[in-house]
Each structure stands twice: as C-alpha cells, then as structure tokens.
Length: 59
Image 1 (cartoon, rainbow, N blue to C red):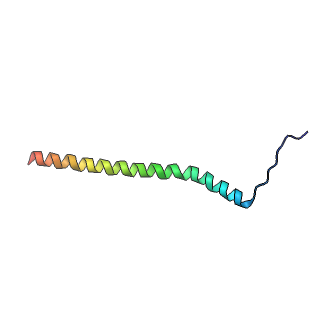
Image 2 (cartoon, helix red, strand yellow):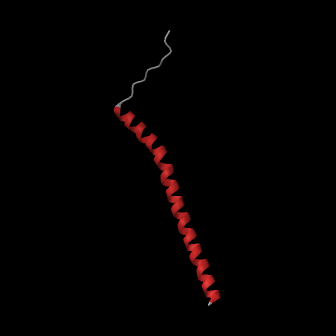
Image 3 (cartoon, rainbow, N blue to C red):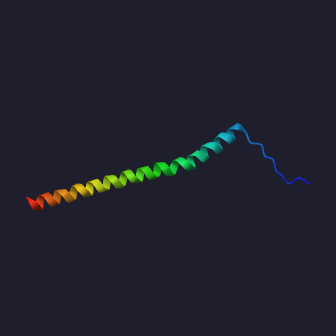
C-alpha cells in the first residue's frame, strides 16, 4: 500500500514556481524600502517647515 502521490511538473511550471517564491521574498523588501523613503521624505519636509518657522519667529 503506497500512499505517496508523485506529480511531475514541467520546467516552465518549475520556473514560474521559483519566480513566485522569489517575488514573495522580494516584494515586501521593496515595499518596506519605499515606505521608509517616503517617511524620510515627509520627515525632512516637516523638519524644514519647523526650522523655517523657528527662524522666522527668531528673526
């Protein structure tokens, strides 16, 4: 009694599977880097606005 199921896949299916698995790893990395970039951009603009306000109040 063998319960093992053997499935053969084509090289194209193997390539698609490998690409999908790599995308699952790469996509969040790209997303996190993009979000970090946008946060840094927003913070730098906020910092510039704060310093401009501070300088104009001082002067």
